Length: 553
Image (cartoon, rainbow, N blue to C red; front, side, top):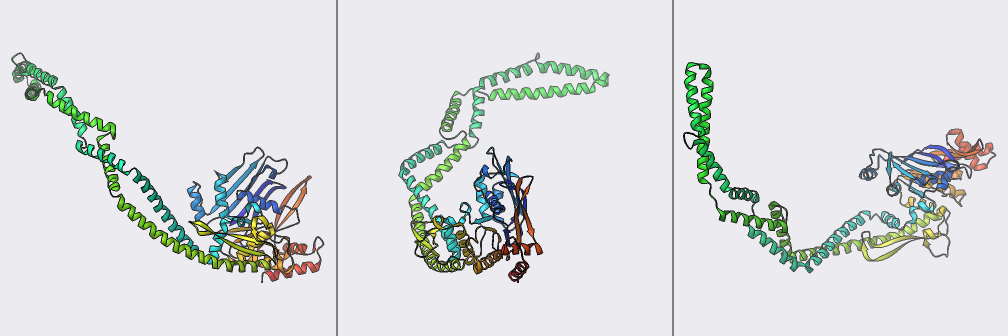
């Protein structure tokens, strides 16, 4: 629900803050005091058209802020979270207008788009009476109202789910048909590719092993020559490194017998001799194994060339080529079994179409029956709300093909006077009639997912007993939703839980709007003013007190 509304520099309003309560709130006051400006400000919060004409004279910017309690609206919180806005139990929407044209929208302090605001706001608040904010003027909402009245919303949801499944199957069939037109060519191509990769008998890690093998084969002469030469230098005769080291080791060993401080050195020399001797023997054996093998080198080169060609055609690595083969083999299985897939899809399509037709027929029948009852119920309510000759026709029109909502659309047609042909609401209904029509709908369909309703012009052209009836019906709606209503009729105002008086003040030659919550004697006085005018008599005050007491008994 709407808990707070702050308005700055809008028309004749300089600064205004309103704290709203749950239930029915009425705004009263003299004509021209600024009540409609407050509704215009709420319209801005709903994403209505922003014009610099709304900015107060002499000011550069106008701002409207609305605070909502959304603790009972998990869908709104989820929607905001998806859009990247942190939101728990409260939602603050701010909209600023500037003369430079830089109009901005903020949601909980973060910049937001007009598209997001237009998506969210109608889920929070609806205005009835102004054509630019009137949800009743949108025919797409009429089918939802008829289905709610008929109690077939779950059936409609089941139809929509089935419709979506059938659309998915049809899409897959279309895709299969498109694939079949090129299936044989595709089958030949994939078969050739799969066979070529299979003949290559690739193995993971093979390319790396071949590269190492090629390096050894290409360097065989160098490896054998260098290792053989190293053996000769180490161990080939008396003048070799090992021969010299042996003589040095023997001499130091003899010295260590005289000076034991050389024992460790003698041991190190002996160990070095033994290690070099092992290395020399290893190099001799290695040199004897290494031999040039041009045929083996050519074989390795040929295999690497084959792998290189496959990499250019299919994938950058052997592992990727093998993965690609798995993918095309899976597609080959699908292509070879496409006849069975088509039969299964066609069978599923036929079964879904049959069930869709059954559910659609049930929807159509229920809507036709409900339309007659809804017409009677709405006309009865409309006649009670000072539209005696009004005709309301929920006109059903069949679609050539089913849609997610069923086989038909509905639009409420309206004729305010006997003998006139019912026409779409937007072409014929006035603001007051639209407000009372919505009030009639709320009597017939009290449940709603929109927590706050604003009724403007609902009391236009009515009086007497009808006024009291309008007040009672507004109070009935407010038992389940927050209702804000602008009224000039005391018979309506007395049913409010909260009454706000809007009035103009002139300070330093500037006009501004002020708002006051009325309690006790102040409220009685305001009701008396609405009854008697500027001169409030004792009898008017007594009548006002009696009306208030009766309304809340």
